[in-house]
Image (cartoon, rainbow, N blue to C red):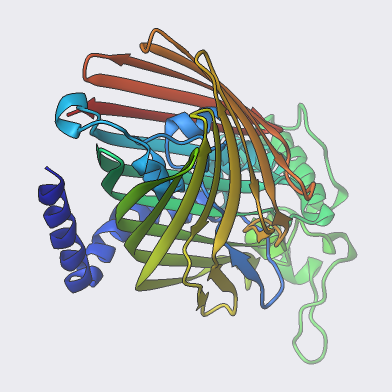
Length: 483
């Protein structure tokens, strides 16, 4: 069985190397529209910034443990976090049937990201602009009411994302683990989406939202509610344009003082929103697809078990850098998409004492890569090292992880360095209850509390997890089949 999986893994890696461009295009076609719309309302940052990719959570069990994994992983998920743990298996595979096939999906996002997705997916800003233009073409109460709907919705979504972190870090993948006596291997393939930022909506735009709402409500109600602005007397004056807006000796139109506002233009129409709003935003993110093979071996020295493991992998990284702004009388979007195909490596080592205490050290993406986008932003794939400890009692398992260096996030270029705690309590090898807590030691990101539940019956298993923080949520679900 091990030789079969090894051959299949080698064939798959060769296929990806030969057909990388076509496979990357297939992945991009499936995910790029969703990613672009998810990130389109993000911070307009400095002209040159650098962002790195964090350690990541790739399965439901670890999600329930708050990300605690380097010493607390098992042979079903070790290839994601510390491949050396694949070797902690003491019986022949033909007797234990501890091989596992595992599909998994994880979605982690901030509430503000959800609002930003709704804004762009529904194209609210453009619909508002078009609704005002339609009212100017035929000023009826119904068309004013239509414009008011989009104006109110746009203002509501803007309030939800203003000064809020927009983060997303999600994963969809599939893995196969095969363990034997004092050794093991695995194969996995999956895609991770990561990105973040905040919006830049100036106070002047928020005030203008209120004015548009008040004016449109006035027209929609035929003057029964809303606010009447003095300059509104100029609406509908094209027939008397020369009288109200005389020209000077050079033929330039002289504006009436009452029209010197963001609401009314010289043609006696409501200004279209894109003429007046100055909000700007930018997102940057990455779609990382990995195809990897893990291998691990266990040795004994006195009372210590020492395991080493490695994961060679092919990575396809597609970076997204989008500048969204309101200027030049239109809602403009500049987007750059860059794709890279390259080789990388994960390493891990574990030391276990008395079958109870385990210390783990792992490094993901040993080979550093840097990517420059056309918008002069840099996205870096740097080595990420993490140290973990676990204690394995007969009735529970408890562990802790800490990042050994800070990592620059996609959100506001802030650094983060996570520390996590996790505990798992199994019941009769059928049900497992999990809890975890994750803290950013740099204080730039909110703490998160996690809960998870696992269920196994015969050869089948299912795991689910949920976590919440300050205006952030994450969900994870995975299945499993033992062979």
